[in-house]
Image (tube, rainbow, N blue to C red; front, side, top):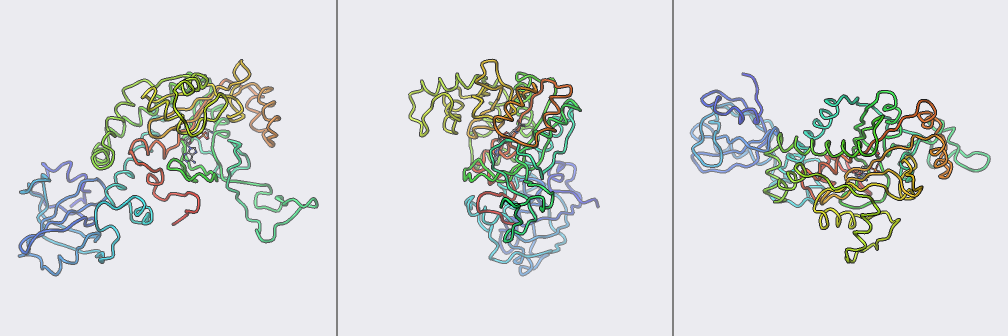
Length: 461
Ligand code: 4AD
């Protein structure tokens, strides 16, 4: 008999009624009386459990007592139409094999644990309904992303995780070194002698694959990266991780408008994909945590994103009469409260904000003719704030060189070569994968959409 997952059994339940079933999984609950016991079995393939019915004339009470919540079992029996409400089919157990019991100290006994409690048990939380749903949705989103770009003729381009360059220039990098920290080699001037380090120079974990991605795009035309990125900012917020995954498409011959079109199409595709393929999981999250979730997801798919300039956005904020914690004026880096005001209160729609002051954006963004703003674009989402950051890139060698010089960046010759040899207009953006998963699942905290979150003072497992 071919082994089937519970998802497959439930999907084809009509066809399987009357047939012998072989199923393995973890016990979610057991209830019943002296004559019959019901076990809700889950194998992770779906949010839905399969009910197993144990007739106590065939199984000893003692044996059944040991299959507590969290135990792992193997059952063979006939699939029959269910007598009870709540499920259409159930398995009448004929054979039971117990792989492992879970003693009474199993931490996931009752329903309704807090997210904080579950974060402390992150090694077991994938076994809960909530995290099972989130992790299946996370997988589906990753698959949808590859499918979206592959179908459009983009190439998946692998950029390095260990790098000697700093893409965003924010100085929030984790250093990679094999130097003895208690006995650092020094140069004659007293500085750390990185020529003695593993790579012969200072190296770090990447904050973004973009700069290397641009090398790919100016050769293959359209590429995307999808990998982990690392930021050593001391940001203890529900939207920041120290290790997160980022998707960074980079396209030759794309102006900022093409970039915005792609970003909007891309997010809508991802959201539609999970609505279609993960409906059970989304519905579970909608019913248990966030009753507007499905409505919000459909709204994003069905409506055009608002597009406006930073300057116009700042004007709306200034005219709003609202008392923000951080006062608004032209030139400030918008805080989450400002972004959320525009999206949730003013427009009530996702917003793409463009043309930011050059001082608050990275060196590689294309300078506008006004000399003050750059062709940046941030996509702002309800509940999340910034979900995408991107721009048209500066393709003019002299202008880029001037920015690099002004900021004192070194070792950028390889990057400048893309502008020196056959430069082209090009654009790209970065989508924070966990922020997308957060939006799609409605989870309040980004630490709950990645299996093993890393944030300041937290690096377990
Ligand atoms: O806006 P960011 O810093 O842009 C870049 O890194 C560019 N190189 C992207 C590009 O143009 N190719 O980051 C992009 C996105 C943000 O919009 C946000 O969704 C996410 O990455 N992000 C984070 N997600 C979780 N934790 C953090 N600490 C994040 N920092 C950024």
